[in-house]
Image (cartoon, rainbow, N blue to C red; front, top):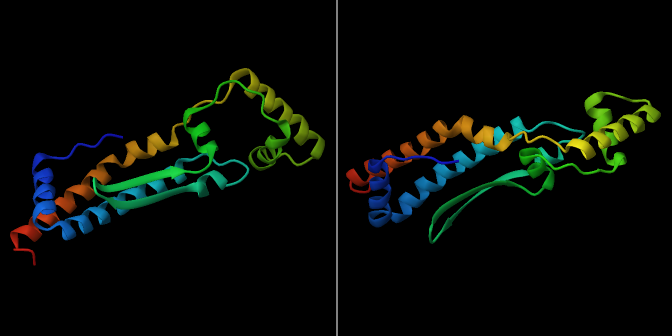
Length: 167
């Protein structure tokens, strides 16, 4: 995701980091925390649901002040998040691993039918792979303006703080 911020906003942050670094860092951390939490929520909401919510629950966000600036990260510890985002090439997954998905998503309950359908789904994945669904990219795109506004508001706070003599 690429955001564009105005030169005036950059100047306010630059001057704030020089003249009121602790306050400016605090403002940046608040804006980054709001932005990463918003992206986390939007990604989780756009993530297709399977047999469990393990992938959605694995999506977390974190913010840290570093010597290079304030860093915000939103990510997942589950490889499945990457597979849903970018899709997969054809491969033969174990049919047994697909059985909980067949039950939860397709609503099939009879054990013999669950096994049969799971095998058919596995064969289709072996032929075609899985399509990219881009829930993270779609989430980031959908909230880009909100995130930009958060940082613009932060720059305005820093500018007002500096204009008021740091009070």
